[in-house]
Structure formats: structure tokens, C-alpha cells
Image 1 (cartoon, protein in one colour):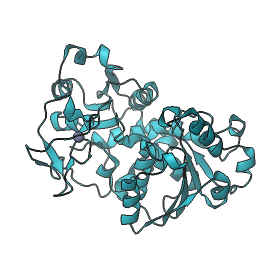
Image 2 (cartoon, helix red, strand yellow):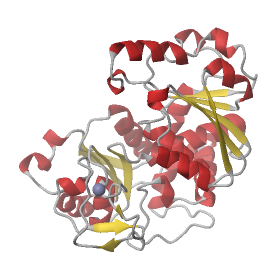
Image 3 (cartoon, protein in one colour):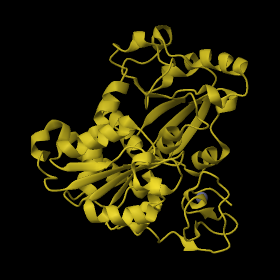
Length: 358
Ligand SMILES: [Zn+2]
């Protein structure tokens, strides 16, 4: 059995096979309309995210399956104090596959360790959201026909932006990727992500101070929204927000076949006047999220076989060290009684759930 907890659970061949399958589904949806007949998806959303939940629901219905679940913590048995581990065991008896969203980091791993059916992480705190990354990869492949040999601009909130970090990790599996990092100084890419870039010889990167400076070299511009609450002062926010706005003037400097992606929702960083420009791919990107989720559901349920898939052993990278205590207050281990699982080696041990060091 296979789960999808993090993009690192998938290798290059699996990424490419899932994308190929999603593209087949887009071409011939009728061929897949009954693939999941008699199967049930449980959407366990401990944190509301209407867009992601609807995308999973619509994916399962389009495969001929059914959906049950809850859309916030209050309407679930968690309100009565049931543990995540117990909920996962019980839901395994009702459903065939789980899509879980949780505000605590590592929650999806806890579910996977306790369920007897596949678990898809639909977002665990600021830790991982692999189906968003798969959606991004599908969008790039559909728009440009390749995932190698790309110059990708990352713009906006590179510090807290979970989607940016996941995209970098996933692109590490492809060849000749150059990232241009475009962010204000208080939202730059964290040091541990820079180390990740440094550690991979297939990835290169450079910095740019403005969109104008970077845009002509890009194949893909991945925009993210800058959240006001990330800034110390209102003045600092006001100064930064004007810096990274994509409008007609900036786009006039971009290549004819460049594509702009955004995980949405957007604020003001992309001017609405650009929406009709065919290079703006973010609405197509969001729409296609449904198809990559369809492909992933088929794959995890064992209904389609992909090339070169790896056997997954969830616990093989972890060991239990009872003295280890995770210090991340947003970690699932802070609210549930769990085995003290760690990954890595001394002195770089990290919590297996949230992947943060002690
Ligand atoms: Zn932790």
C-alpha cells in the first residue's frame, strides 16, 4: 500500500507517470468515469479549505466513486476528543482512501501510520501539500511540454510559502533547473532551503531584486501572495507590496511563451488586467488540480499501474528515541500521544512528523 504524505514519497518516474495519466484523463475522461465505482473517498478536513476539498470531491465523483467526510473540526468526532490515530483506524473501515487536511504539521503521517487504507496529505500546517505541487508540475508540463531545462522565477513570499518550498524539492528530481529568487529581504528563502539548492548539482539559482530585472529570462514565473501579517510594520509592508506586482508593463518584457503560475488565491500581486493574456496559466492550473488528484487516487488505490514505482515502507526512515522531544509547537506530537519517531542521524536528528530539528 502506498500513501502520499510528501512529494518526497514520489520519484521522478512516478511524477512523470502521474502527469501522463492526468493528461490521459483530460483527453479521455469517459475512459475513467467508472474506474472508482464502489469506492469511497473520506475527506477528513480538520481545517476548512473549501477549494481543496471540492477539488478532491469532484475528482472522486468524476471517477465514479463516492465521498464522505467532514469539513471542519467542530463537525467531526474530534470535538468529542477522539484522537487522530483512532479516527484514522475507524475511517479505514468505512472508506477506501483518505484525503486529510490538518492544521498540525505531521498529522497526515500519523493518519497513514494508523490507517489500513491509503492516505493523501491535503495539507498539514505549513509542512507539506503534495497535491498542490503535483498540480504545479502538471501545469508546467501541460503549458510547456517539459519539466527539465527550465528557468523558474519564484516571487513573493519565499520565506513562509509552503508551495514554493515543495516546488523546489520536487524540481530537484529534474535536470537543468535554474531558479531566480525574487523577494524582499524579510521574505527571502530560508537558509535550509538554500542548503537544499546548494546540495543538488542539478539545481542552480540566482537572486533578482525586481520582476523587471528577472522576467525576460524566465520560462515560468511562480507568483505567491505576500501576507500582511508577515511584516513587522505597516510601512515595511507598504514598501514591499508595490515591488512585486505583475502588470502589463512588466509582462511586456517577458518571453512570448513564458507562463505565469499562482497557487491562488491571489491578492494584488497579479493585476486582473492580465487575466486575458494567454501566458497567464493560473486558472487553468487550478482547474487541472482535479485531474492530477484523479490520477493520484487511481494510483494509490492500485487501479492503474505506473512505471518504476517504489515500494513504500513508511517507517523505514524512522526510529523511535524516547528521549527525543520535538520543539515545534505546531507539531502533531504536541497534541497527540505518539511514539517519539525521529529521522536523520546524530547530530541532525529531526522529528519524523514535522521534520523540524529538536
Ligand atoms: Zn515535530
